[in-house]
Amino acid sequence: MLVLVVQLIRTPRLQYGDDADVMIPLRSRHSNQEEYIDRHGIHVVVGHYLGEDKPGAPGPNLTHEVLNSNGFDPQKDAGAMGAPVQVGSWEGARMQLLYHINKFNLLASDRIPLNRTLPDVRRKQCLPLEYTTEKLPPTSVVIVFHNEAWSTLLRTVHSVINRSPAALLHEIILVDDASEREFLRQPLEAHVSQLAVPVKVVRSPVRTGLVRARLLGAQQATGKVLTFLDAHCEVTTGWLEPLLSRIGQDSTRVVCPIIDIIHEDTFQYVRSFELHWGAFNWNLHFRWYALGHNEVDIRKINITQAYKTPAMAGGLFSIDRDYFYRLGSYDRTMDIWGGENLEMSFRVWMCGGSIEIAPCSHVGHVFRKSSPYTFPGEGGVGGVLYRNLARVALVWLDDWSNFYFRMNPDAEKVRKSVSVGDRQQLRDKLQCKSFQWYLDNVWPQHFFPTKDSFFGKIRHEIRSKCIQKPISSSSQPTGPAILQDCVIETYQPQSFVFNKRGFVMTDESVCLDVPDSRTVKVPQVRIMACNEYERQKWTYDEEARHLVHVLSGKCLDIASVANPTSLTLSTCHHSATSQRWLFKHEDWA
Ligand code: LR7
Ligand code: MN
Image (cartoon, rainbow, N blue to C red; front, side, top):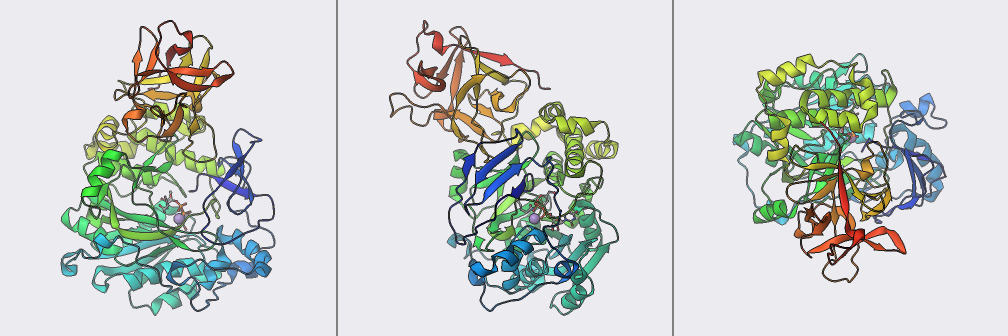
């Protein structure tokens, strides 16, 4: 998602198709940059949002004419049934030029008709489910946009009209957040006025950001439910009924669809897994994590049943309109982009509601690697994002706000400049529960430090080196755990939580794991996605200073003299100095 800024530094050679997402990591030149060759053979530099890259900077030769033409040039059957669009190799230069406008393949999008067909991607168990339409609460669909492309915006609108039962679609509200494109003015109004469903276009006179734009749209809405969508989505058959039916039964439920992928290069519709839920990392960035096996077991009993999620992605959800306001709508001090998704997630859960994912509802979204628009406001992208996230931390995280600011020095810098009194009052008024309650009850699988868990470095007594997780460009780094020189300050890759349940975890929901402890003589100790299986459990023998792997009964050890940075398991010996580990506790609260 938008936390990374990607810069292409060599002429891309795009190949289309559904090839696997293979990234070949390269050596990093700057600590905050990673490089890799992506699946298209493009050399990509990924900076962590705060580099010199300027989001929204137009690419080469983007003239007024190019920016203001709606470019829409539909070709019959292009992208039909969600198929990828093939762009001829002779069109590469034009495609690249247009790519800069929205940071997705606009040339491909503009070829796909507004009414393109999509496959019914629901599991077969969803098909027999029946909904009594008359009993479901109708919804207003609110779509905010800033400089969105004609084809993506209107495909969103048309897909909603084509695939929602008329009785349930009360209206569509388009909120223009001060776009600068001619075609989004009168031509947009002319187009939507001919549609079969009432569409209101609301304009913000100044660039206000997605939170206040959504509030503007919600104010105009008169449906019983509000359904928010990003401006580059396509909904699939049956998407709406599961969302509305959950809210009809209980108006304190906030319900999200499964978010499928509309490929940013080919506009292929790619179904995504239904075995993920949403949460966040130590930087308060939203993340998808695989469900633990306990959650999967519960789901297997009825895979059409909505399941809870600790957080929502933010763009696609339905909420009862009265409940939206009763709960404090949004924090309207949040600017442009970021943070509002977690703010609302914490608020809903901690103040008596719930957030769930309805697996029979599938909506596609164009995911992009960087943001096409500007971030007006002090400090640019970083300033805007960290002020929003600092607000989230100060209002909702209790003691963990200190942990957040420690782990995010850039947020610490803006901490003093934000004031959140009004939102704290709201939290008091609604008598919301604590963040401790949230961690214990909503997300017991979390990897945050707690009062009764260890947090800090795990140091080898003799070597004086620390266990470190692999560093990689993927958001969930996995690979061999290694021993490295201990870094004095709070250094994320060497910070671990060892909790009461026996898991040694760290940021991004990865755990100290020994996948082949029973089959291999010298098993490798790895960092893997936390899965709650026994093979990830450990105990600490304080006297012997052994870290014991529960399943095998063996001790964490250095692999060999020849291989002093690798870790393995070996039979525990009190005399083996290579098996002694010290836990260096760090204060976090
Ligand atoms: O200043 C702005 N004004 C706007 O109107 C900035 C943005 N916007 C509009 C924009 O045109 C778009 O329609 O707001 C919408 C969301 O912006 P995106 O598409 O740039 O955001 P995103 O898809 O990268 O980011 C996700 O996180 C955001 C955090 O603020 C919002 O919650 C987005 O809605 C959210 N998108 C999703 O949840 C879709 C699924 C992605 C995932 C996971
Ligand atoms: Mn989006």
